[in-house]
Structure formats: C-alpha cells, structure tokens
Image 1: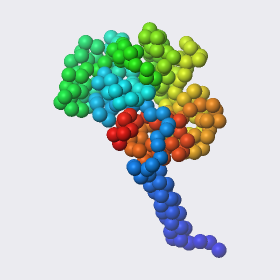
Image 2 (image 1 turned 90 degrees about the vertical axis):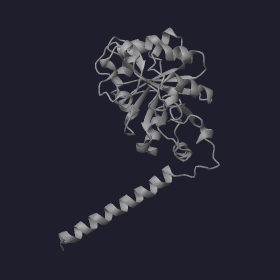
Image 3 (image 1 turned 90 degrees about the horizontal axis):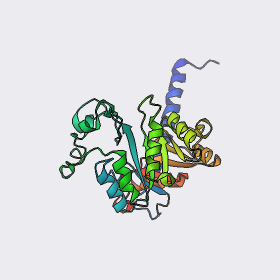
Length: 273
C-alpha cells in the first residue's frame, strides 16, 4: 500500500524534529556543564593569541600577561608585511583596528607602526603596536613557555615558512616551538627543512580522516565539530588533539572528558573563569 505524500512529509518532519532535539540535548550536555564542577582541568592550556581575554590579542602585553598568569604555552599568528617583515597579527584585514579593509601585506612595517593595536580593546592599551616576530621571540626567549606559532595563509609565498622557521632558529627556540597552520603546504615545507620538527594541522571540521590526509604530530580542531571518533583516530595515529576555543570551565571539562590533550583558550588563567 502506498503511503500518501502528506504522511511521508509529516514523517520526515517528525524525524527531523527528533534529530534536532537529540542534537540540542547533546549540545546542552557538551557546552553547559556546571561552571563550578569539582573536576580539575588537567589538559594542557594554551594561551590563545596570548592572554587575549584580558589584553589586546597578539600584542606584547598579551604575551607578557600569559606568562604572568602562569600559562605554560602561548599561541600567536604570523603574517608578512609589504616589505617582508614578519609580524604578529591574526585578521585578514586591519578593519578591527582602523576600519581599513586592506591587509597587513598592503603596508610596510614603518606604516604599520602608525596603527594602534590596543585602543580597540581598552584606552589603557592605546600605545600598543603590532609586534614583529623578532620582538615576540625576544620576549618569549626569556620565559620557559612553549610556543604554538601559527602561519596564517598569506597565499603563494615560497619563502614564508622557511623565514618563520629560521627566525625561531635564530632565537634558539625550535625545541619549544610547534608550527601550526590551516595551510598544509606551509607545514610540509617545515617538514622538508626539519623532518623532526613538530607540526599542528588546524582544521575547522573535525573529520576522522585528518591523520591519514594530513600527517602531523598535533591537530587543532574547532571544538564544535570534534567527535569521539576523531579523537580516537588521532590518538591511534600517535598524535595529539587540541581544541579551539573554549572559554568556560564547562566547555573545557566537556572537551577533557572527550579525551582531548589540550585546549587553546582566550582565558589562560583558569582561576579567573
């Protein structure tokens, strides 16, 4: 007996509603664990763009703040100016700082020195400038922190990965550095230079095929897309999985229970959340 199209449609709606409700139950459990839960955060905590919850991100203040609050690992983003200076900046454009839709690559470093990198966050930081990789490594060299150095996708630049690697070598920091990128070509170039240098493949979607498609020692995955299957696949490949960017204790505890090895967070001082 044929089922009328009307009833097929109603059944499809019902199935969709059940799926949605199950998803909401999962999300509620995953994201809203009690913030005052007794369980301790024992996974590694990485200061995302420095202590960016309390300081303007990717600035020397944010990196110093991460160290001061006891962070063991700091993460930052590297780009390249028009005249070839390696600088620390995340966004594709300067719009957040100046309203300008041009990128770092459209300016020389001397021109970027005119840009205020801190006032958008708070008037007390209005003298902050976009730091160079040199300035950042010089600051971190005096600490014992590990470094997650992300290479932003700046397009086809055959020298970019090598220049960032050599700069870290110049400061004798390679034993503390993991190179990160969403662009695997950059990470492959790092491996060509130094096969034993650890790399982290960044991924917006936590697919379980990551370890086979993009061999690496570390994977940084969007926390909203991570599944137990992917965590298992990464661990079975002998690698470690980190998640970005949980900013509450409940989120961190949920990820910890999922089996991640570390979290990349704006709030490196866990006592403040």
